[in-house]
Image (cartoon, rainbow, N blue to C red; front, side, top):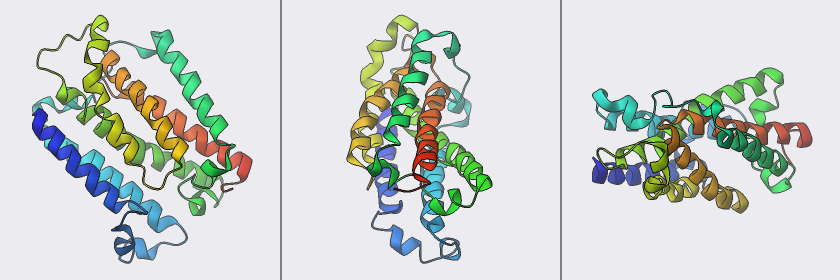
Length: 237
């Protein structure tokens, strides 16, 4: 499973970077329905969400057999309650807090939110964006990078006790490079920040044997940035 997972993950990541907006295939795809039927920046927005869902969400689900899909992709409940863990609670303060501060940076504000057309249509558009962003972007992202690229790579019978977490950090670190690089066109400071952030999310998978704590951290961090940009810049710098 491990060599197969690495090979498939490389293929998926390359394909993703070709398709998402600013990738070489995106201009071609955006000329055709349903993307060509949308207005403003919604064609690129829809393409990004669709590519993320299909490549990072649906494909990994098909690549892992149904009898071990939940455990192997981290879709199971955490083995221990992260809200009883002071370390995890600290991350919920630190990373969304730093993300909020970054929302005052004009470089970040010029890139986020992904759709000014949608978020500029009123409160309903903002809420819709936050829901779409959570379900069709952050969830498949965590399933792929922190589920498919961590748990299937762990040696069979790996010790899952809390004291063994750091022992397997090498396996949890493999995903941080493709995860950081799968942001074509993003501000350079975000790419650098994605490295330690990916490490923390990877550690969460080892600590709880589930993607859900890292998913929550990613959602809160990302939405804090978008909300700050919308409040401070009105959606764009």
